[in-house]
Length: 161
Picture 1 (cartoon, rainbow, N blue to C red):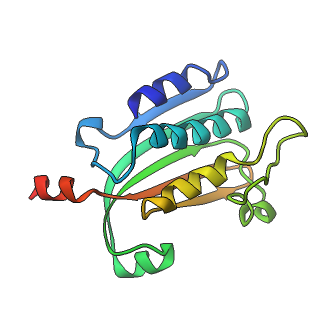
Picture 2 (picture 1 turned 30 degrees about the horizontal axis):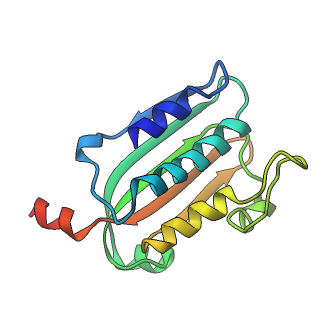
């Protein structure tokens, strides 16, 4: 994951910053393959970089979280341990009218010929295929935070016990 972040960090516009929070060595093993995780990060970081004005900040964080009953219900997940990956920026944000469509296939806010509208749909689809989910929280003028929840693999849980 660090490789993808480093590679994509090099593509940011001058004046934009990328910060990575969390420890790769402590990151949980999830039920996902490396190529697909790279695809998720590529889509999220590319979208953030394209939407950011100069001087903006992108923060990427990876943590292990315990999903409670109430949180599981609101996220449509099972109770248990998850890897929470966030890609957060302090850019222009997403208009409230577009939030409900953001993960729809072919939905894009980019000009004609500049985007397919498949990136975030792929992110959500991959997360769901592994038993996780993708969420977005955004406020116009304040920024956007995409959060990906992926179940921690049983192998990782057994090693931690």
